[in-house]
Image (tube, rainbow, N blue to C red; front, side):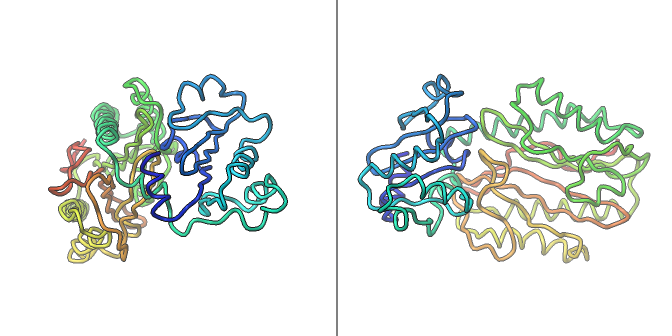
Length: 356
């Protein structure tokens, strides 16, 4: 909250209305499913409903918890109306047209047109990009839990098992090992289906010979992990081995490019250059990575042309892949923390091709 107020002062913001739940959690610790945070230079209040009376008192820090009688959003806006500020700002990326109408409707008549203004640039997400030491520790723990899941599930990856069975095994192990849940829908794609970048697990059976891509993550103490490993059932052919080696080289080149002051576009290009040299660049159809934290997809975006500079404390994914329709797909992904000395891999599970 102190950092947010520093940002508000720097940007000349009298007050801020925060309605995106991950931002509310980040700022004041409240984890309920209905919350709006109103912040001025000296005061703040977190509005929720009666389901969370005890939880709000227990979790909320740096803001006064208020149990709304009707609408948390309307009462937060009325609180700002009465706070004596000239104007209040909101995040246009997280505010619907109907929500904005409700916000304006909660104000006194004289303020309904000129009180609320969209932020010109993000306030909270800019803070969330750079993790502090406590956050980095939580994220490293979540990432290592993901690695343990990979080790646990390997014996279950056998020809004839279904993709859904492997996904269920991963999710069972995750809960058994202490995860709050999965950070996104588990991806298990095998054989020709591995050419689907986001191939949801189905009842399709794993082949006798072919790739199996596993993309999964867990939530641990509110923070997400994300990793991908691609293994091979049986002995890979020459084309498959060449393609895997190229993706691994591209992934390692991008990890090596992670440095404070490097742009996200430069990291992306490090991966693409390797695949271009191998004649496989046309099969790399997505960005190289993204930020991770309380949400599985956060800023920054690691993609072509992105000018965002990397800074110590950022955590990003490095996940190049190739997808050849009708044949196979390969993706290798690590979570990487940006440090003063370069990139630190948080997911140290083996990346050399595993043959099962």
